Every structure is written in structure tokens, then in C-alpha cells.
Length: 577
Image: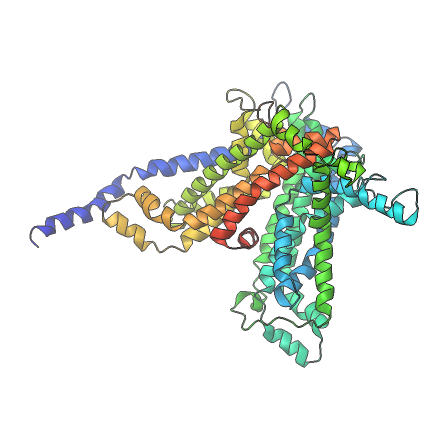
């Protein structure tokens, strides 16, 4: 004991000496500087650029006068707001009945319905837009051709190149957000209140309308707001449908400001209302979803039993399959047909089948295969950087290592309220000019993707670190290790499943990101989403469909990995949190 005592004293003394200067602080400072570089700098440059004269750099309001000095520019803003409202309403019609049926009833095929919603969720909106151009293009679309064949009419009733067509397409690929929020809320609703309504004479449908759904109303409203924000911030679907239909929305108008010559000052000014609307609605959404007036959603909730629908369960299943047909079955059937067709309009004839489109995409096209490689490379690097950066920030915030931790947390989640096109304009304004001159490089795309998905990484890392008891880290400190050692040897191994989930949740959407990429790519850094958009402008739907399917197929192993490691519905459930 006499020999051991000095050793113990030495070990206990180490943390005290380390507290005077811990080299880990250099890492914390680096993390904070990187966060400022990724989030604060582009936003500051965006605001400053909106008030700068194009050539002199002097302060001016002329950019705002130019941005809103023409009626068509103002019309584009109102078109976006109208598009967001209509798309969100349609998405609610698709999602709320499905969420109630899956979460609260004995409808058959509930697991299948969840899987199909996941398939919708991972389908890029611009891919869905291409599929619906094949389905509902005037006269040539398959649904119109089928209608003309059956009725003998000279023209079909559907026209995807319209405001209604665009709103339906956006709703079909954004309703999973409402489904996620609503099912998460409905799964917490106790059956006791529904039983009380039934005792008082209410049937299943009236109980659903008057009791169950009102209890989930904050979640439904939160999902509707997210769908609204998604609709007004999208670029791909509006560019493929609205531009040929001869009407503009904010994102397509911003794209036109980046024509020749590039008017980044005017684009920055024009983006400000979109940013303002987004920030305001995100705040409203947070207030709604955090509302505490619904006790059934905040307590344990008691027993939950499925509502027995009787014969109506098959009606609900039919509705689920109808929505799935619009979002998954029909689009993918005709995407596959187009990808394997010599000419997509000739249909399913045997002599029309070919693999030449895939051969051209993978081996003959000068940039198509490289664009796929670029997509996965940039997404992989971005996901890795975002995961480790947000892990460090979350550790700093949760363990309260700095007095301004709340500010760091705010910076990590701030990109959630910045639409992709606005973020891209900020990066262009900040890092395209000298001395950095990053425009058109792989680095600016990686930085933009990393920033875009920081909120996903931070939410997962923060929740995971909050679940860890700090005593294990303190044990490392007592034994002489630094906080970096504790983070590397204790925290990271314990959170590897969470980190894998966060990495996949960033990587998968980053591979299909278009809104930011379309403004920042260069001749040698084109990604698959931009390539698909370019092919859509050329009208080459066979090769476009082949490229879109290649991108989707390459994503499937990652989904399988996530399901094996984290559960079947890991994307839906983790996003619901």
C-alpha cells in the first residue's frame, strides 16, 4: 500500500494538471471555426451581397428594386406560395388517412404500406417528375394514351405541364413527411379516450374524426408546414414541369438569375423573402409540435389497441394501394420500361427492349458514369465530415464545455431553415470570388452538402450523447486520459450504431441533392442529379431513366445495411424524431 499510494496520487493529480491546459481544446476551437466557416460565413455574404452594387461593391437597394421590379418576378413568388399551400394540402390528403390506418387500425398490409412509404421517401422528387412526364404528358403520356384507346377521344384529360400537375407530383413525394409526424403521434394515443367515445355512442369513423386525429393535430400541422417548405424550396420538379408550362416559381427564377451573365447580387436579394418565409414557418412548426396541451401525447398513454374496421379495412387497404400506385408502382413501372426501351413511346414490345441505354450511360457517355462516381464520392465525404463535426459539437454542447454551447447548437440546426438554393447562392457569394475561388470545384460541393445536412447529424449525435452516462468518460479522465481520448475510445465506440445511422441519413439524400448542386457544379464536378436534369432538358428520357435507375439500385445496398443494423424503418423512424 505504501508503494501504491504515490501512484494513485499521481493519477489523481493528472486531471488537475490537464484542466490548466488540455490539448483537446485545440480540437474544440477547430470545430467551432469550421462551423463558423460552413454556416455563418455564407449567410453573412448572402446578406451583404444583396446590398452590394455589381461592379463597385457600394451599398445599394438597387438589387431589391431589380429583383422585384418586374411583375413576372413577383408572380413567381406568389406562385411558390400558392404551390406550397396546394401541395401541402394534397400531401395531407394522401398521408393522414394512411397514417391513421397504419398506426391505429387492423388494416391488412400495414408493414407493406410502411415499406411503400419508405420507397416513396427515398425516390428523388425529380425522378418522380420524370416518371409523371412519361405518364401524364399531353397526348403522349401513357395514361392519356390509355384513355384515348378506351374512349376513342382525340386527346387525353391529363396535362402534367400545368400548375395542378406540378402540385400533385410534389405532394406525392413529400407526403411521407406528414406520414412520419402523424404516425409517430398516433402511436402514442391511448385507446382509453377512444373507448370512452365508443361508450358514448360514437362509431369508429366519428371517433377518428372527433377524438384521435384532433389529438394528433399538432403533429399533422407540423408535417403540413414541412411539406409547404419542401414545395417552395424544390428546384428539380418545378424546373422540369413549370418551365415548359411557361410559369415560374422562386427557385426557377433564381436559376435564371444564374444565366449568362450571372447576377448573384440580384439573386441574393430575390432569395431573401424565401429565406424569411422559411424561418418564420419553421418557428411556427416548432411551436406547434412542442405544444403541451395534448396530455395523451406527452404521457405514457396507457394501453393501445387497434381499431377494428370490419369490411372497411379492405377499403383502407385499397386506398393505401391507390396512393402507392401513384407514387411507386406506376412511376417505377414506366421508368423501367423507358430505361429498357429503344423508344419509350413504343411500349412493351419485345423488339423494343434493349440494354443499350445502360451500356451508353455506364461505358460510352463521356460524363454520365463519372457523375455517378462524383455523387457517391462527394456524398460519402460530406456525410463523414458532417458526422464527425456534429459529434464534436454535440459533445461540446451536451457536456457544457463552453459557455456559448447553445449558440453552437443553433448553428448546427440553422441550415434546416435555409433552402438548398439559398444556401448555394450564399456559398457562391462567399467562396466563388478570389482569394478562395472555389466555384466549380469538388470542394465547394462537399462543403455545401456538408452544411446542408448538418442538422441531421447534430440531432442524432445530440440525442445519442444525452443517452450516455458521463461517468465512463470521467473514469478515463481520472486514469489520465484527455477528453479526446474519452471521445475516441469510449464515446465513439458506444455510439457507432447511431453514427452509422446518421451517416446513412446524410449520405442517401446527398447522393440525389440537386437544389444546391445545380448552382455550384463545374464541367468536371457534375453529379448524377445534375446529369439527370440536363438529360430531361434534352428530352432523352430513355437514357435519363437508365441513369435514374442506376442511382436508385446503387442506393439499395445502403438501405439493406441500415435495415440490418438499425431496423426495418430506420429512415422513417429516425426522421420522425
